[in-house]
Length: 350
Image (tube, rainbow, N blue to C red; front, side):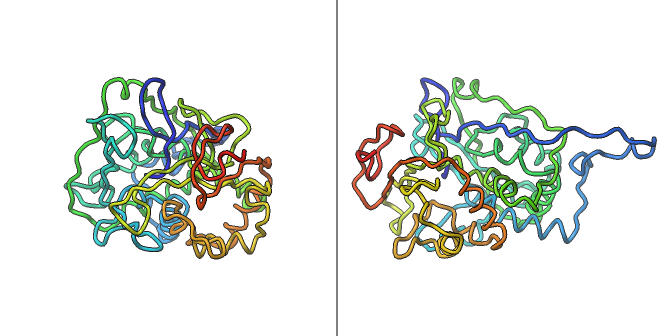
């Protein structure tokens, strides 16, 4: 898995911190009865119209910024870049309690979202996808475990969300049956769906910083790069400063569990202050900072599919972040850091 922050108190649950970014300003009253009867949003239609433009945009988002196959596939981290296991893309994945830092018998299952009608999402309605991505409500009505980053995906514009759904519904069928998520009652009681959003407008692409913020939010970069407390709340003043430990078999040996810490993305010298736009794009495209490879848990395999313009917008937004002096270095021995309350290389230097 990718994003591990903790809720609620007293339970060892790893999830991303809850973030509500409620955009939009409601729908304007239509001037005629005919217009009033029409859906205010494409997401209100019983079936989202499949168009070549939506299919292309959806592919760009799912295979890039959103990284949906990263959790919804069995993944081969021995390859660079990491990739879904052949024939299992979108076919789901099972994360055991041990992998998530939770006691057994807890497990979280990223379901089969391929178009398979028996074991996948072939019979789901478009509205099921909308509720899952906007509110964290599964097609079976349960509240989804927030390892699924719906708190970020809900900020997708209506049109981007519609495109995402169109592409996801086009995924080739994968005939694999997955078990259901299993959570103890105390964990399930702590999970609450998010309220619906009436409308999320298109981002302003002419405002590079604002558009970059949209992309960074939708891409849930905060989930891995902002240290959080045991309740999943971001530690004050440390947004995007890295140091979050990510534990798993991310290396060339699929049986060896390793721990890597997310990097500081702020423009402080201890972060990426020495990056320029060209270097940032090169790092994302190659998965390396000069001769130092990024860990495969960093989804550069997806982000490298983004356009130069979108990567430039992301970099423009990251440059506006408050600089945070927080040294993180995965080539050094992990030591306790008083700032982020975790262990990582150079933790004792902060």
